[in-house]
Length: 480
Image 1 (cartoon, helix red, strand yellow):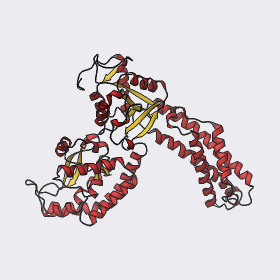
Image 2 (tube, one colour; image 1 turned 135 degrees about the vertical axis):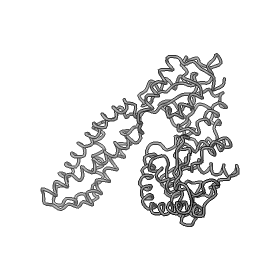
Image 3 (cartoon, one colour; image 1 turned 60 degrees about the vertical axis):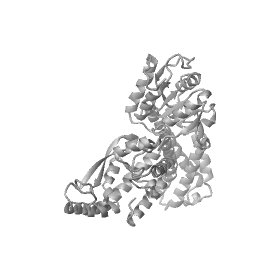
Image 4 (cartoon, helix red, strand yellow; image 1 turned 120 degrees about the horizontal axis):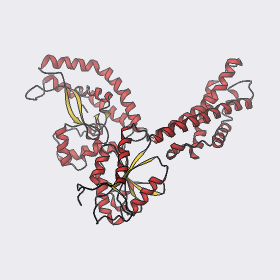
């Protein structure tokens, strides 16, 4: 049956899909980021606990403390304490609604950490002070703050969890016995998961559905839900005989901002380069991670912070250059100085990109000033405004015109995969020399390969290296 065929959705399916649309409208946060914040505050409590008694001694005891040794000891103790708490499951991301407090574990980790720093110079941090008095004050202050942090975090995270701020929106493709197992597990555990629904293309008697699961829609419906941001994670739960279908279904989500998983009892030769795929689990359900979600947890926060800080500095430095270039354009040719061009951005959404005009009005030929401006990449500097506005990033796949983007998507099967992240002012393809406009199919595939490789291997250090190479190219008169 075609994925475009109509399907009737029962009451249960309607109930499954309605909450997903409501939860999609609320801002959602990363569970890992929330757990890391709790961990950071725990570490801060240990460091402050070390410094607080020292401050009291300094103010009221007339003793000049050694702050270097104090903070060194506090940081070491904090690292040891956090390591112990993490190994004991105190930052488990699946339990944010019921964040473990365990006062005994908190105290044990703190005392072990404090005993481990003996000999690092702490006895000399406060001269003439009894060592055990100091340790007792440190332990008391840090333990009180650890308990306070845990109590406050538990209340805040529980409220945020109940509001659906951390929910992973999971959809299952397949409506047979395997899907029933996954469905029951997702709905029967407090995993911080919102079950979006079960999807299957076969809605008639040919569908293997001994479990009576209500079907929320077809594969096309699921793809639309993922494209609209109503699904975070897709689990393919089909019988082993359906390997061909599973490979096709997995590839259908390559270009979308979702992670894709396959139940692990299925044969492993259904996906390409299976050795590169990781194995994970969702409770007792084993999964093969076919495709991770691009830029998750801290990554989008780190990348956006980098864009704002570095983009602001570049805008400030380049402002005189842009003003001189704009004046040159205005004096040497007729027409507007700036132009806005329609491009495709994140999730294939159309955005308007700012540029300095480098061509003559009418024939579109480059002006003498435009040739120089384009050679050094000055025409693209107004896109820093797009970066600060959040439409673009400093580094990412270069955006193409909408018409060219659509033709490339028809020629290259995986072209839309590059829209999983924001487009960039420069990218890996540009610094590697794949910058031509009139490309052969082979050149276009090469540039697309660089774009996909960048998305899969993203790191802050990679952005720094690409940006540095691009700036070096501009200095040499080879805009990237």
